[in-house]
Amino acid sequence: MSSNYLFLFRFFLCVWVFLAAAALGPSRAWSYEEIKVTDGGNLEGKVVFQGTVPSPRKVIPTQDQQVCGGPRDEPRIVLGPDNTVQGAIVYLKGVEKGKAFEKPKKPPVVDNVKCKFEPEIQVVPVGTEILILNSDPVLHNTHGYLITDSRRGRTVFNQAMPQKGQQLKSTLKLPGIIDVACDVHGWMQAWILVAENPYYAVTEKNGTFAIKDIPPGKYTLATFQPHTGVRETPVTVEAKKTSNVNVELKK
Image 1: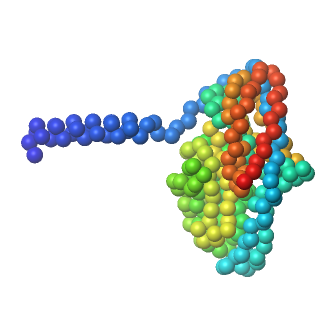
Image 2: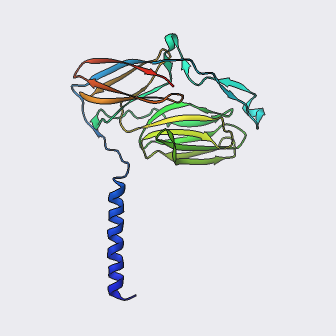
Image 3: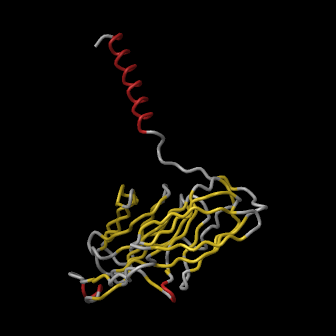
């Protein structure tokens, strides 16, 4: 190939790459600025389930029963008094700047314990390094998927762990909800919200939550529960005031 043809080939290749990138749009990224919040407001509320309470999920271990146990029922949603929802993740979307992230007191962990994940629900800041453990004397394959359009998307981590006491680390670089599964024991499941800002909470046993020191403005409050998925609610935060919001979930 002559130098002229080589130059043209490289030129058009660069143009094609540029146009392809432009067509795809910017890659998924986050940008959050930590500032001192002097006039922040608060959000307080409650998450309630509406409708017929779903029947429990039937778990029938087909292998490693000496560790995993026998057949059992597991609730799809844990309800408190007046159908309040325990263990739902509540978080604000679209907060570009605000208070600093609180550093975890100890490294976040996803542990395989008697063929269940512990914890089943947790929230960590984006960029966090988590510790994946196997406390069972059987093979687990801990597989994390980033949820996209309510479906499992790209793999975030995928760790085969054949030995009891094995430890591996994974850095969560992208914000979003991760569905954690075990490729060996299909009933195992957990969820991690990788938060792009520190404005989140997990509902208490009575379904209540509180998010504090939020810069005044209009936001979207997202509520995630594995059975119902994500529910979005518009909210307005006023300076130095507490706003109340109740979220109703249904399947």
